[in-house]
Image 1 (cartoon, chains in turn orange, green):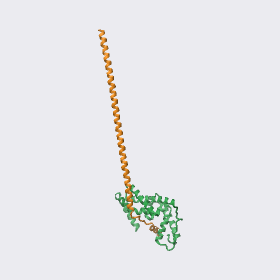
Image 2 (tube, chains in turn cyan, red):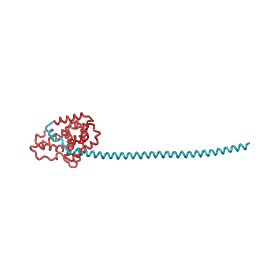
Image 3 (cartoon, chains in turn purple, green):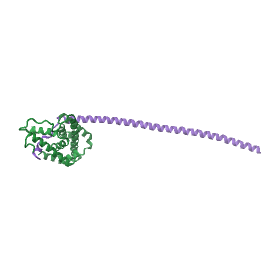
Image 4 (cartoon, chains in turn brown, purple):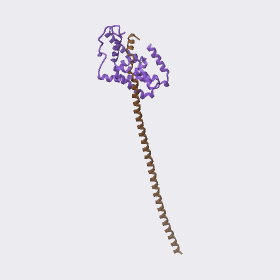
Length: 106
Length: 185
């Protein structure tokens, strides 16, 4: 290192900031942490609420589908019973006709 | 002696692994002079340098989980401080243009006192173009090797060498002309 470079090195010696520098940095860092944490809890709660709404919507949808399916089942059952009743009536009529035609033949 | 201490320190840092990473407050306390001085060399304003140094440490606080070792910590701080200081100096320069040629010359030219020369050199360094100022600060304040400076400033080693050489020529010429022959050797 030349004498000039040595002069330069001396001129550019490190200097200390104010005595309370570290304390101020730590205070600002703590404030940033608190801000970030409150933001985290807010987003956590928002996430929870969204999840709850999603679960409720989903379960409501499932229940509605089940109800709809049971209504359809009951309607089908009713139609089946009516059809069976009509068929029974028709069969009875046929039986009566057959009996009548047998008696006439005798 | 200082170079020896710096070498010993860098060896100790290189030897320590990630587990040797200090607590954040300790890191601030250890490196505050380094970060503040880098900022000061670019801004030459106590309040602005203090604010910039604080911002650098707050950025470090956010990135703390990504710091791998004490050596990485020092490298990270130097890099961020230098780049932030360059940006801040650019903004200030836009507000108040000043160059090496425009810088006020000292009025007393004979029998220059050491502190006066130091102060003059600081002013001259502060008025260097930003690339030259960066390499001079990192080389003579931080006593960094050329390869380290190249990494911090994202430059080639040859560019760092050239910038240092140009800056030294400029400073020597200026000092020789203004403070008398034999000073700028």
